[in-house]
Length: 167
Length: 167
DNA sequence: GTTCAATCCTACCATCGCGGTCGGAGATCC
DNA sequence: GGATCTCCGACCGCGATGGTAGGATTGAAC
Ligand code: SF4
Ligand code: SF4
Image (cartoon, rainbow over all chains, first blue to last red; front, side, top):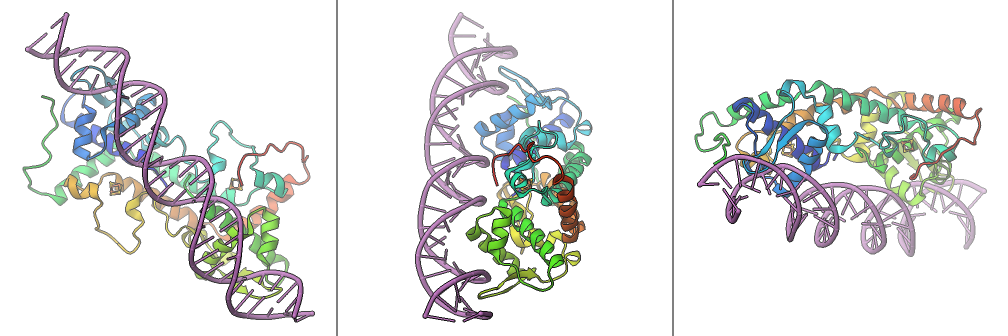
């Protein structure tokens, strides 16, 4: 599996925030509400949303009736920022994890083989492809998609999808 | 990390076979020689090359002076075949692992959320980007690249080799 | 000013896939 | 027959991942 659940849960969280942003104005949404709506463990989500907050993608208000809201509009949020914040790096291979190292630290294979690593070319292309797709996708697209999916799967179901409100 | 060492070792193995294919004619190369040249554990390589053989990418001759050779010319081998053979699937998320399921098996989230999964759109784009890059890259390119890298790094000093942990 | 709901933070833990090893059974050439 | 080399299945240690526990802090409401 390419991405961990950190990415999955984080993106789902962002989508949910995007929906809320459209519904209500600047009201903050509590993590508890999201955790229940998405069926995710609250304690784990807390750790995930911390990453998004540190990256400046969401803002928080503490205390009762506090919660989270998007720092920018969904249209201004691209998924490469989100994934980078969540996963740290998109590294197809361990020679990519060292983000500080722009280039030229040889792994032991390169070092003692005497020649450069041919496969690195492949991994760089793959990583480029991934980053490209991520950068092309905005949160707004995913939010819209979630509305379309919702309409397609349950055209009329009054029981679910009540807007999440406090109190 | 996106790919495991199975992919890395497997691709390096293929590149090595590609070099051999250019050098000698139809002579088989023993795994032991490759393991020593690349500094990889022989017993582990055996298990990896078995995947490539089952996928029809390499052929083998048993017994003394036996070994492996490419089933096709490097120019006819695209990396999507190689990676698919090695990793089984390029799955950014667990909803992709089920290759038999062309569509419409809901994961538990989709099932009990009542709406489709919005993030799936993102993962599908990413997977598409990866597969595209893989399909565009042939083994011949990597082999050529390995020759160029060798020419570029060998003349230079062998002292500035900062080894990285792993491999 | 107490209470309650929420964000925050750190440490801890169980599971499982991954990377790696071992031993042995066939096949082939000398 | 011995030397290689491919094949195969079972086994194992470790580390990251996913998840939990507990508590400190903040702030709105009553
Ligand atoms: S061997 Fe090549 S792909 Fe693997 S870590 Fe080293 S540079 Fe990267
Ligand atoms: S929640 Fe969405 S991304 Fe995650 S497994 Fe289910 S369908 Fe795939």
